[in-house]
Length: 415
Image (cartoon, rainbow, N blue to C red):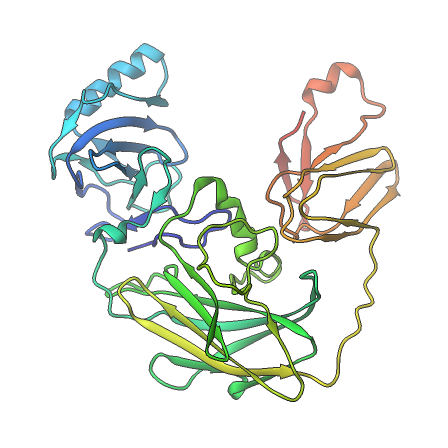
């Protein structure tokens, strides 16, 4: 595999399996339908999934075949008629139920590299037909042989306030003590905080491939009691934005490091976590160490684990940070900064935000600085900025751009 289900991508969870071609990065392998059914949707676009087929099956599931090079001849002929009728290369059509029926194992086309794809492969999904929720194809017995346990790279520990603000940050590379067993800092850590959250960096490998795929299951125990668990069996489309809080988004932005939080944040509404009576946050004591064990397993049951002790440092850190406004994560908020109006919808944040902002003048330009871009937002924040000294005839030519630190400009949608 080039990618596993639930893998942590930049802005979403991977919704299927990325299956490699028989020859490295060469398109053209024959593709066959996984089970009997009928083609319910055909979509062709220059980006996204490129050339993709959706097949509905009588058992209530839909299989998806994306980034194809071409479809079989009868489907191609049908598509060409639809393209001519719509006068468009890009189409999204829903054939009548049963119009294009397929027996199990029927040839449907060739593996390719169409759409937003960076190498020849088949992106394969299984969805619930009614809800369209993606489901891990490995639950249906689809997947390669795997005898390799996950690799665990590092552990991050956050000191936390009562409202989940980070008061301390430490990252520890793992140390291997046995075949699939790890520790950090020679097994003992001291943290200047009353409460901590633990994060794990790691990936899974499979037989005969070097790809760093996502980990199927993670569990964390504290003093031999399960306190956190996540399993990648399915992820709803409308929850995919919460990947920004499932990981440490700030660490990802600042250090290009992807770590999974073993403590769900207050604003995290993902339904992938095990139902435990705890929230993953660990209380620390100066006189007694807490034993923390994290187990990471792949779908085949290969397990790696990391074990270490952590206690509270006698030397605590005083929080001296300042802020302008306190925004509750589950409430809407509107504020004005000079002549700029800002609006944040409820449930946009992963926790309460101690907001900093400022207004300054640079030559003849007004600069509005609003917090940091490394803080995650589930939904867009709305900003209304007055347009001054510009001919009204040019209004339809205006656009908003993001100026990166290196000076590059990125277009931002707006009206």
